[in-house]
Length: 107
Length: 120
Image (tube, rainbow over all chains, first blue to last red; front, side, top):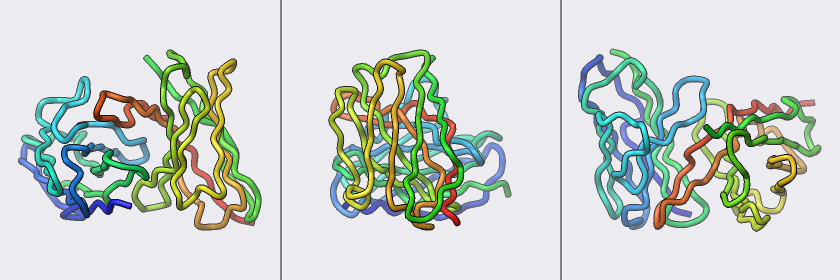
């Protein structure tokens, strides 16, 4: 199985801050990488697929980058709804695997 | 707009079988892939597997010996069965559409989640 490792596990930020979350794969996965946001008590929402393609209706403040084994999710200006947990997921091979999550909290 | 509505018992006894249903509305099961994903309390996401509308499946090897997916086209429903459950199977279970944008894919529509506790 491909292991996905996110960093940091949690971070504190303020409204309007720029935030960066990293995800590393245990082997090269080209650009087969998705990002999800999960608000407390809710199902995850797909933000980005193919490492950098924004899912329909996702705000442009979200940006994905990277390829191979290293990936980044950047939120350019944190909004209230962005205080949540973020997961990366590889779609290179089965079984599909997720990172352990990065919790973004209010400072 | 497609919606997925999950149903099933929230409490299952150890060694018994967990059974959940996911009803698709605002769209059709036909032509789509569907996945089940679970999340233990306070932990991350685990992909259980997928089923194509035709009935073909692919399960996570970690659960393959105990899990079965099925599709009921007439009722637009998906089902998950997990046998011989233990406390380690306690989790929120989600159904999701596994959308394909070749060569990429992702889970773009999710059910609301079902909290399942394994306890006597």
